[in-house]
Amino acid sequence: MSAAPRKYTVTAVLGEGGFGKVYRAKLVTPGGFSKDVALKLARGDIPEEALRRIRDEARILGLVRDRAIVSVDPPTQLDGAWAVVMEYVEGSTCRNLLHSGTLPPRVAMEIVAEVARALDKTYRQPGPDGAPLQLLHRDLKPGNIQVTPAGEVKILDFGIARAQFAERESQTTRHIGGTIGFIAPERMEGVEGPEGDVFSLGVTLHKLVTGRMPLRRERLNPSQVSSETASAESAALGLSARMRDPKPSLRPTAREVEDTCRMAWAQMTGPTLRTWAEANVPRADPLPDDGRVGQVLVDHDPQASFVGSWTTELPPYIRETASRSSRSPFARALLAAALSFVLVLATSLATLGALGAVGGVAWWALLPQPQRESPPPKPEAPEAVDTGEPDPASTARPPPPPSVTATASVASTPPPAAVRPAVAPSPSTPPAPPPAAVTWPLTVSSAPLGAQVFIDDEPIGATPVLNHPVPEGAHTLLIRLGETVGERQIRVGSRLPSRYVWRGADDWQVYF
Image 1 (cartoon, rainbow, N blue to C red):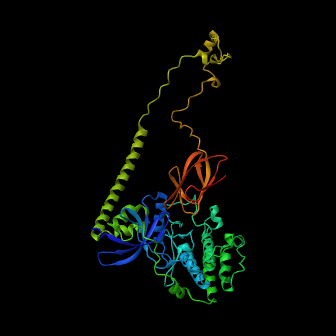
Image 2: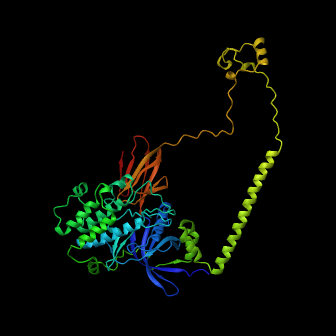
Image 3: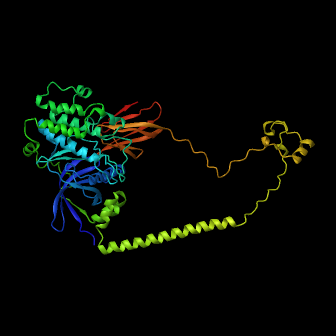
């Protein structure tokens, strides 16, 4: 008997990204159970690479368990759209909180300490195979850190996160993700590591305390603290400078960031995070209605949607749990007996097949093998004899008739090996592979980052895309961010532009 359909009533718009929107919804089951959830709905025309990232995000959130990371249900389809059902978190992002002014240094340090603690824990947490998960968020910024009215901290948006586990689909090796200003310098060169998240968190700490991004002189020399800095902020900005060191090896680890924050705020005055949040964090922060508010989205068969469509894409222990949860004890016993029978039958057939093959080879080896007869001698061809005369094909005069001595020599002795005709290639010899197409590296970026890039209608990733190999010649470059699309014809090759930056509509910057 299939489970009763789950119904989600959309109540508010929480956020929007390049892949879809996040809604607040209320889940109500026939048994009277209800709770608020966050629905991350993918667009219907979402590229396959983006869909793989959404599925990876659900897998990552399903693997980690931490108070600072939202919980997630198995992915499902709601009225034909893929969706990730997540824990709903009240409150506001740090980005929205900054609209009302900067945060007290002690409050900012508590927020950063909690994020650093979660980064350290999830990076070292064992994955399904027992090896460290090595989770990297890769897009830490004020907009991805939520604070609840009770002073809890939640890390949001793992859409471009990386982790080491066998079931991941997206291979983000040709492009990087993140937000300009928060991306560690080594990541622009393709170097990924936990130091990159520490850098982004250091920029976040600076912005929480000052309300602005680090100045140019502070980026070039992070140890330089602005003269406008008050003494109460010096500890926070000093830690932020260390976290933003250009050399990854000189930055503190996430664990060291947590410890430093805890020791620093113990000597600071001012409200604690919990006290400050109760007075300053709103309980709701919805966006304008987009027409979905009030709609009821139905998952008619959550088990079938999860097990049938996602069984081959989720970790084995999750597949096993999902499959067993929909079977009765009798059905499980019957299935086990059937699988045992099939296994015994397959083993027997494989054994008989192997014995038959061995016997067939032995029987064939004992049979008398037919002897090949020597082919009859070919008629002598005087023109194949090296007579010292020019090649008949290379002269206009007809060749002279062969002499009797030459003819007798052909009849009595075989021609020397040096003058035998060349042997034609065997038909079984594979032809030489065609020459590989010439490719050139292409870099595509956008402002803001996160736009989807397509070359000749094939997705190649999200901006910035670095040094993606593109065959020489003419191509169509298309870039999409939300509902905005830019398109232009390009040529790739020697002494041609190799970098394109899209700023919306038809605004492109081209570099050689």
